[in-house]
Amino acid sequence: AQSVTQLDSHVSVSEGTPVLLRCNYSSSYSPSLFWYVQHPNKGLQLLLKYTSAATLVKGINGFEAEFKKSETSFHLTKPSAHMSDAAEYFCVVSGVTNTGNQFYFGTGTSLTVIP
Amino acid sequence: DSGVTQTPKHLITATGQRVTLRCSPRSGDLSVYWYQQSLDQGLQFLIQYYNGEERAKGNILERFSAQQFPDLHSELNLSSLELGDSALYFCASRGGQGLVGEQFFGPGTRLTVL
Image 1: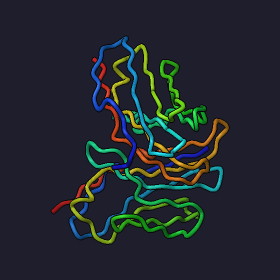
Image 2: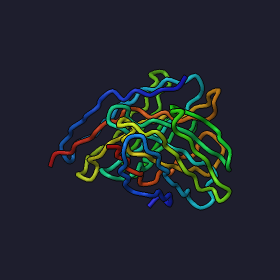
Image 3: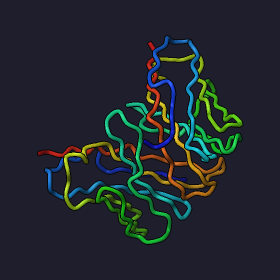
């Protein structure tokens, strides 16, 4: 079975400081992992994806994530937070089940950026 | 703009009623996914269609049904509505059949059941 756990429901950082949003996954198969961002009253936008190529994945807007199989983690980082980064972030695992190809979302992490 | 459109943007209805949500995928995308996002349940996968056929099912209630038409647009039908069905319903589309493609999300339909 596939699942993801986002370890923090809320993260607050000051503008210009690093961002770390944590995600652990569980998968019976070699997983595909994604991070999506949702700004208020908007749909979800893909930040980055891991698909068994390079373990360090670079995404849009300066975000990156590192796939660590030994730790079953896929944490999202950014060196310097901007005010525009304030949003909800979702970690997602994709896998094949007996009912087909499914996508499992974490519960989300709300990022607040303090000026 | 993701290229995925959803109508209507907002829908207010009463318990016991039936509504239909519509989704048009990105041009050329064959897969359509439906999700429900609510405060207490988070973002949940409901169902996937690929080129007109049901491909995967998630936590979709029996009161809910979906279909994908030959022009690839999809409709999600919600019947015998309950207060707890109030949520944001997202549609997403994807081009490939494999596991690794990203999904492109529409802006969502906000359903309020009174």
